[in-house]
Amino acid sequence: MNESTSIPIPIKIINGDKWLFLMNLTPKAKVRSVGMDNKPKRVQDEGKHHCFEINVEGNIRIKPKSWKIL
Image 1 (cartoon, rainbow, N blue to C red):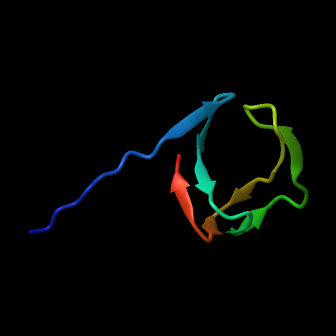
Image 2 (image 1 turned 90 degrees about the vertical axis):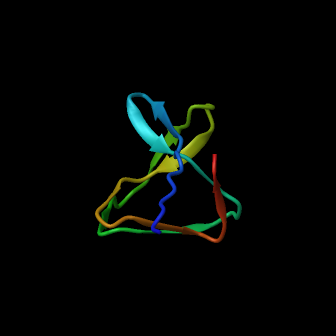
């Protein structure tokens, strides 16, 4: 018998954009993609914390050592 389980993945809508939030349990992660911006932009997240944002596209992979879905 072939059974499948679906797990809802929470998203947040910020300024009309849908975001998937994963909590990285370690301070570093690798991001790989076919293309990405040359310079990250300094932005504020929804909690008014400053962070950097970079656009990536095509075959995006993020590799934290451990994470959980928020």
